[in-house]
Length: 110
Image 1 (cartoon, rainbow, N blue to C red):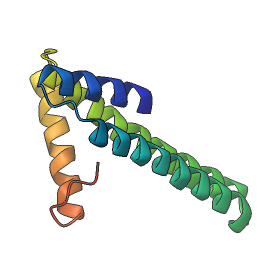
Image 2: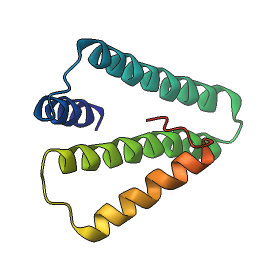
Image 3: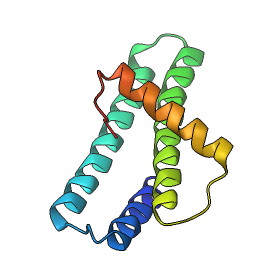
Image 4: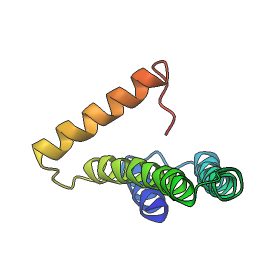
């Protein structure tokens, strides 16, 4: 999903005339950071949680959360590319984005 996000974001920026190698570089760094976070949580879940079911729930929950975050970004990027997004999907994406920004003090962390 991260690769799809990066490619669709790159294409959307190209379409909008906003390609910037510095932004692209930091996008890759952010993706690498996500891998580090998910890997660290997997490691901690396997080594710190005594119950195997808890460990699976924590590590898979984190991976699924990041997966859906990237999926929302892919949908947004496709919209920027001119792909028709069903109004129900667009509304759901907008609500998810707003809730995420509210929880992060109005800051978009994607």
